[in-house]
Length: 404
Image (cartoon, rainbow, N blue to C red; front, side, top):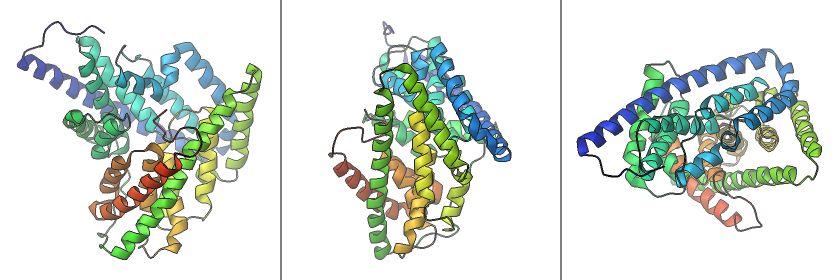
C-alpha cells in the first residue's frame, strides 16, 4: 500500500481518525451484538436437538469447501490477521467477517466445543480495516487501525474493554504502547455501542462481596497457578501435536478420513457429556459454586482439542475459560480459599497461560470478578507464567496460542 506523499495537517488527521474510530465502534458494536444473538439462538437450538452432533462431519466438509472457495486469506484466519498487523500489505478481505461469523455459528449449531475469540478478533480487525479503503493510510496507521479493530471486537464480544485493549498489544508481541490509548478508546466505544445501541448482553460474574486479603490465600493462589500454567501449556502442545499429525498423512483421502473419525469420536464422547459441548457457559456457573464434577475439566479439554485439531471455526478462549474454571473447582478442596475464588483464578489463568498473555489475564480478573481478586490473580498468573515458560523449553512445538 502506498505511503502518503505528505503528512496531513493536524485538523485533517484528527478528523480522519475521529471518523475511523467512531465508524469502527459502531460497526463492531452492531456486529458483535448480532453475533452474540446468533450464538444464543444456535445454542438453544442445539440444546433442543442434541442429535445435531452427528452433523459435524457434514459441517466440516461445508466449512472446508467454503473457505477453499473464498481464498487462502480468509482460510488463514487469525494467522492472516496477525501477519497483516506485523507487516501491513493488503486490506483484509471484506468476506472475512461474514465467513468467520457464519461458520462459527454453524460449528456451534453442531455442538462443537469451540469458542468465540477467534471470531471476535477476525471480525474486529477485518471490519475496522474496511474503513482504510476510504483513505490512503501509512503502514503504521493501518497497523494501528487493525489493533483498534482487534480491541473493539474482543471488547464487544466479551464485555471487557480494558482486557481487550491490553490483549490487542500483547498477543502480537509488540510493545507499542503508544497505540494503547486508541485501542482503549475503541474497546470502550465498541462495548458501549454494542450494549446500549444494539442490545448486547454479558454475564455478570462479579463476587457479591469483596475478597479479603490473606497471605495464606495468596500462597494457595500461587500454588494453583503452577497447575493452571501446566494445563495451559499442555493444551497448546496437545493441539499443536494433533494438528501436525493430520498434516503428515501422504494421501488426501486419508486426511479427510482422519477428520471424519475425529468428528465422529467427538460426537460419540459428547453425546454422554452434553454439558461440555458448545460454549459450556453453564459449567462456569457450576464451577463458581463448586458444584461441578471433578473430571469436567478433562472432558472439556478432550472435546475442545478434538474440535480444534479437526479445524472447526470459533476459537479457544471460552473453552479455556471453562477448562480453567472447572479445574479450579476440582482443586479448590486442596486449598483454604473461599468458594468461587479458585474457579475464578482458573478461568483467567489457564487462558492467560495458553496465550502467553499474563497482563490480559490480570485485566480479565479485574473486569470479570472485581478488583479484590487482583492480588490472587497476580500471584497465580506469575507462577503460571513461570511454569509455562519453563516447560516451553522442553521439546519442540508451539508454546502459545498466538505465537508460531
